[in-house]
Length: 165
Image (cartoon, rainbow, N blue to C red; front, side, top):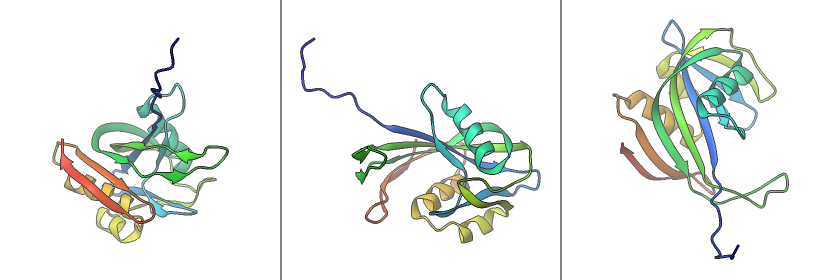
């Protein structure tokens, strides 16, 4: 086969969830490096994004969930130094879902020191990372149409695009 110079793109796909309990509070986890965030993480090879969101929230907080609608799709298009033998971290695509808690009690994990439910307004006081703040605001602004965002987070946060889709 002839080499045309074309390279198959590589992207990280991630899923996260705003988990709502019966009191209409939202679940946050306190990570070791980014502070308070809503839980989620990378989709593993052979895994679909909904199963990834369920797995990540169970791993990070011990909560069983029902995954609902997507409220935000975002792209982190910055170039970042890699680790574990990877030279550069590729573009990351994140899908953020509204989820309902079905069972479990918030608990810490290997990835975080604490997890708890908080009032929706209190979450904005706790979240520090600008990208997570913008994604949480997308949840608060959600009226049935998802928001799309493009941003970079390094060397500093820069929101390049935000619009309804």
